[in-house]
Length: 259
Ligand SMILES: [Zn+2]
Image (cartoon, rainbow, N blue to C red; front, side):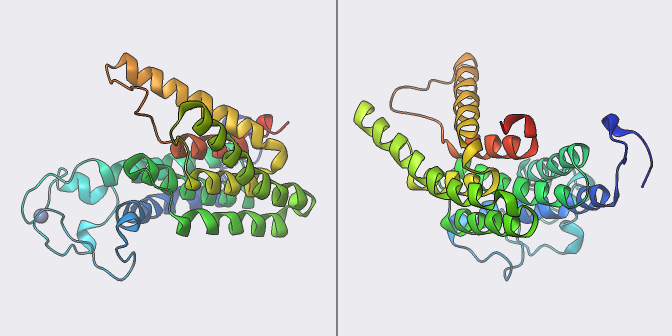
């Protein structure tokens, strides 16, 4: 405990807050591995990391978050190939999630904020890269949300169980209407399962906010891309998963959205 007054919080930066901030770069490395390997059905834990250029097996000294990358100036120690921004990027995002959670909440809440945030980070990033929301991530997130309700939020359990069913159905209905209107698929099964998972965390009553924020941030991103000169024609689109993931975390984190 610092006893300090972070953003008006009387409790200061507590133990839970420091723990999540300290472990977040390691979690970020793991999330990076998930993002790379899950869509390709590669083993997650039982395969040593290798340089993607020369295939050299990487040791502990190559896998320390941030520091390895900085010490080697973003290059492979063996073949000097550029390692790219991917891993430090995911590690920074995981750290940012922990810092934001620690500023907003205290105690167990911080851990729940981070669990959900890191999970959604993996899902959103995979969807952005591959247009895919793997069932092995979305379905356990539904169960985790209901388990968290059972353990910490009994009063909200019914709302959150209802959120699973309504989240799934709502997105299937939107997808159906979209297909009728545009003559092609805009939203997939994965999006419906992700919104079901969102429902398991924020509850049925907060799902309209999730859909609204996801749609608005998605439109904003499309407008930014257009301003940057990227052509998004009628036949191309952005994956919806990253925006659903962001909206779910914001609504979970900020009670102001949960009317
Ligand atoms: Zn190499």
